[in-house]
Amino acid sequence: GAVVSQHPSRVICKSGTSVKIECRSLDFQATTMFWYRQFPKQSLMLMATSNEGSKATYEQGVEKDKFLINHASLTLSTLTVTSAHPEDSSFYICSAWEGNTEAFFGQGTRLTVV
Amino acid sequence: GQNIDQPTEMTATEGAIVQINCTYQTSGFNGLFWYQQHAGEAPTFLSYNVLDGLEEKGRFSSFLSRSKGYSYLLLKELQMKDSASYLCAVRDGDYKLSFGAGTTVTVRA
Image (cartoon, rainbow over all chains, first blue to last red; front, side, top):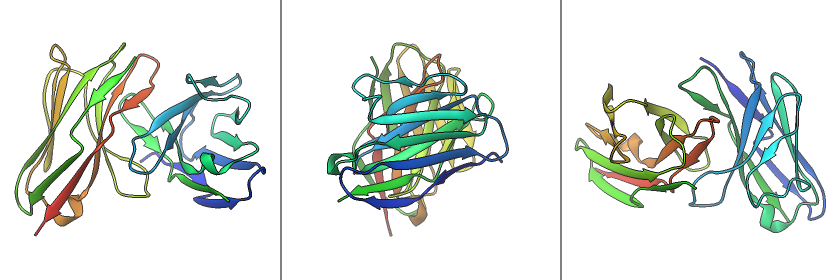
């Protein structure tokens, strides 16, 4: 079946630094990918829609200058958390649709900002 | 906006049946999905409904009533490994998924 691979699975960074998270569709092309954030014991909240070859569209309340999204190819989207702070610590997950009925999720990235 | 409600927690005995209800009020509807998520892991797909009625898939079944904005996930013959969070999600016309807060199911021996 289709696979979405996300890297890294865990990252610890110092406050003020930037972190890049990669999301790849391994055996299908994804013109659109989605980035979610999940805080402990809460559900997934959509952050932004990543569009290949064009600008990402951000959900209300999500700072586009802080969460930079690049979708340079049909199989790769990246999310960069810039100037990270402890409140950005969360579980970040990407997803892509393969066909009409199934969204495949990456393994998730546990970001801890210290 | 999107409003998706499901119970916070449910507990059941191994071998039993549990039904998780989900009600939704959304600005667009293009399918309802159920996902299973274990702590610290990504969600895994369980079922998809776009038309009214029941979809059965092994031990799991899902029902949808679009006119009532209602769905349920039925888990039969519960096993210990079914202990997880179950997420109800509605897809809109832009293929965005809006998730409920999730129902934590605990299966006891």
